[in-house]
Image 1 (spheres, helix red, strand yellow):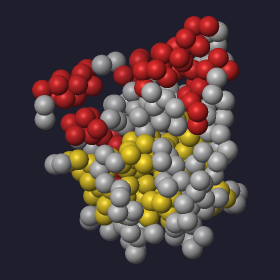
Image 2: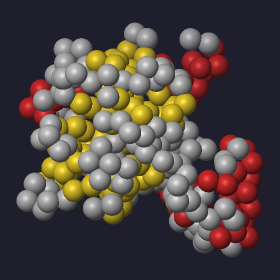
Image 3: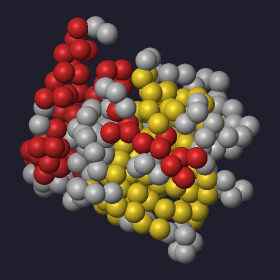
Length: 282
């Protein structure tokens, strides 16, 4: 690992990550008028955000940074591929492949257990034994709403308190069990064939909030213990490509599927860019 990466990872261990995240959350919700607009314009220039894809391309139209960051896309900007599973976000592939004896590959020399990712739920993790996973990283420049990879019925949701390490590629290479130790929200669905799949929204430094369309904002507040919601009796169904949640600032989504004949898009490789709606797997 290069010295610069080692120093970055070291800084992640000593930074006051929660304080920085709370500060970012306060700024993101602040209606600062011209100051907010200037900050948005600076962010667009710094990260080369393509505003032509936004439903509203005018930076001055957003009252808060959060409104800008969770902006909607214009209609037709992300057509859905004719595939069993479509990509749920804009981002880049972190890793993907098989869940090997309950272990999920994170980076060279590092992996973590599906049970740890799923808040220690061994029974749920067993449903994905020898299954498939895909981890997708959302950078600051990306569209930050999360959509359904296929049609699904919501079964349960679990909030898992945890750390707030950055989730960029350098940290994934340098921090053990990164995605199983950060704060996260585990959403479990059943597809139209009755097969389970999980979408895990992973928090990170200055990710001020995570939200779902059925619950609204989940954090803040940041709870000290695991929280669980059972939706089996509510018949909440979402269509393929429909919005299911959103992040404030960049983070990661981990997708889990059970064992079976699932074949990922051959163009999907570690670090390859991906876009919402493109074919993910057949």
